[in-house]
Image (cartoon, rainbow, N blue to C red):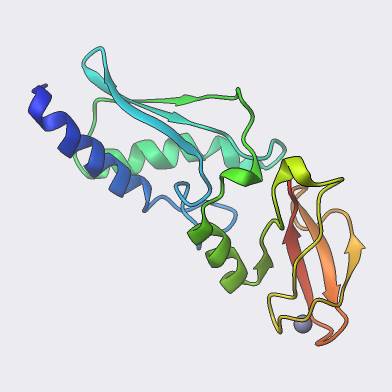
Length: 164
Ligand SMILES: [Zn+2]
């Protein structure tokens, strides 16, 4: 591996990772979610460190395979995917673009920083109509990382991605 190619390959890998969608929420990529920690050459291969998101979401086991498959498709076979559990992933790592995509998809993004929250926070507004009048229906939605809410204005149910 030539040193001068390192920068180009890293950018190529980063671009490909942008195309790997979260299995749970297909509109956001693993990059949007802040799961990609590092991309670096190591012992003749490319090492990619990923942070698993919420534990208890079964999709998480699939992500290293999806990443490997996407890279192999592009001809990058000498890769090594490592899941780094420490420090634990936080919703604070979701990018601004990721939060916007969640909102557009109808999921209220985490509202505020996890460290500032008393608990899991509550949605800033209904992703459907923008009303701030919302009510929690259940602490757990389709997955443990989300809560079920109802908008008191348009009456549509929606999910809130909890801060943690
Ligand atoms: Zn609404």
